[in-house]
Image (cartoon, rainbow, N blue to C red):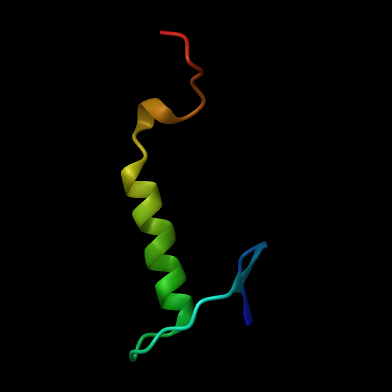
Length: 49
């Protein structure tokens, strides 16, 4: 188990992987992927239309 600090957040890694990319690179890619999937309309809006 590894802990990685990015800014003010600390991430605990529970998964193992193989490859030549660092854990930090994989976490950044995952965070960016989640950001791209979220549209501007999803932010700070409730269920009301």
